[in-house]
Structure formats: C-alpha cells, structure tokens
Image (cartoon, rainbow, N blue to C red; front, side, top):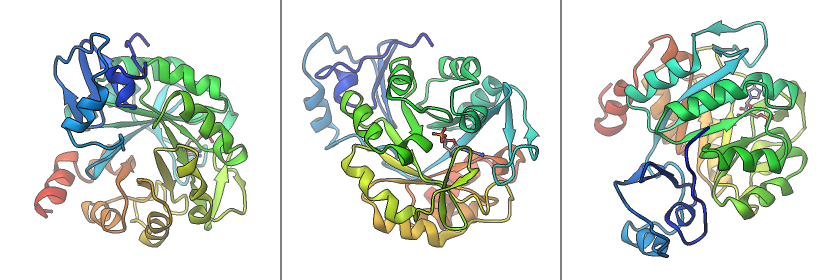
Length: 301
Ligand code: AMZ
C-alpha cells in the first residue's frame, strides 16, 4: 500500500484522527479538504473547530457501506458466514471500484480466510483495494495483534475492525487507540443472541449490548454488529437487536446482516444504526446505492 499517511499529532491527518493525507488532499469520513497543505502547522484544532467537529466520529450521516468480502483472492458472499455456501463475484478491485463509482463513501473490506484462520491471508488483495480507491476503507478479518493493526493503519487502511481479539483481550482496543485514535471498530457479531468469534464458529455466551458498553472507554470509534442468523439470506433484517445495541452504547453502530430491500435499510436507520454494511443485495442488484440514497434523503423508494 503506497498511500502516504500522516497521523502525526497536530498535523491535519493526525488531528482529524481518521484522516488520511492523500496526494495533498485530506480525506476523513465524508469531510474532504481539497488541497489543504498542513505544512507542519498545528492547524488541526482550527480545522476541527471550523467544521464543527468535536471529535471525528465515523458516519456523521447514515451510510450504506458496500461489503467486499474476500476469500481466496475473490469477492464472495456467504450465507450465515458458513464456508462452502459462497457465491463468487469476481476481483476485489473491480468490485471496490464499481462501488465507489456507484457512490460509496466508505468500503467495508473483510479478509474472510483471515477471520477463519486467525491471521491475515488475503493481504495482496487487501493492498490492491486500498491502493485503488480514494474513499475510507475499514478492514477486518484476522487482525489479532496491535502491531498488525498499526501496520495496516500506517499503510492506508482507515479503520481496523477487531472481532476475536477485541472480545478475548479488550485492552488491545485501548493499545491501538492510544497510537491511532478513532481507528478501531469493534465487531460484536451475534448468533442466537450471543457474540461469536473465530469466523463466527465459536460462541462466547456474551450478550452484544452488554459487551459493547466497555469499548467506548477503551477508545473504539464504532461497533459493528452482524446478525449472523439473518446474514446472507436476503430475507430481511432483525431490528430489535440493533435497537438494543444502539440504545446501550454511546458509539455509532454499524448494522449488518439480512438487508434485502431499501426498506430494510430504512428500518436499520430507524432502529438507531449509523450505517449498514450491505453485501448480497447489492451484488444481486436487488437495489442500488442510488436507490438507497434517494430513499434516505427524500423518502423515495
Ligand atoms: O463470515 C464469517 N464467517 C465472518 C465474517 N464476515 N467471520 C468473521 N467475519 C468478520 C467480522 C469482522 O468484520 O464481521 O471478520 C471480522 C472479524 O475478524 P476477527 O479475525 O477479528 O475475528
């Protein structure tokens, strides 16, 4: 990944926390400062004040975030996260570029083999996607150490998503956030109401809403919640767990799983989610990002 990243405290990239300096442009969430030259001046606070941002929170407006799940170098969608159920959708860079061209403001990238095997496997594909697109990328799957997370963040990934490691060793969230503020998303995916880890193959007995509350103090910038019971089935969302989680935690909730229609997107927003990750419905053309955008902004659908 060749993108230059500047997270030096006091400089623009660092001050905006999730910011990325890319060819003289600062990209942070949906805020783009064209041609700003940090020049080593401590202007971060000024910029933050100028745009009215207390701290950088992802998803200041509700977003539909396309999923690029990678298995064996290819885009796939699984049903309920089970290996062997995959439908393939081609090259990850092609998919990523297609979603950005279609209006995506953020990409959700998952190294599925990494999630199952506990270490990053599809590093090449990930690197190619991060280099190819100019929107923020959040990446999960197999990131199990702080060193690995920092390396990815330093190389141009905007947010790392930690599931297994964050559940098994919550202090890792604080350790990463100390050096890279607002860049850790904690993934609390649930099956039968319990948080699952290790590629969703192991139950923890934890209730997602109860488990989520500790991560705000540890510096997490968002909680990802995938409802595994409905994930990949294209049969609609379950709003109640999202509502409970959003009410319990003072962090943006990124809800995922089951979205089949624009109405599902609106239902997740109304349940309190800050964003939704959508995979199969977009790949299968059930609706477009533009359809979702129209419905979210004008109530049209
Ligand atoms: O589909 C699956 N079986 C699956 C999946 N999509 N298992 C884990 N994951 C995703 C989580 C999160 O984004 O939603 O992988 C990430 C967590 O990986 P890890 O290695 O930190 O537990």
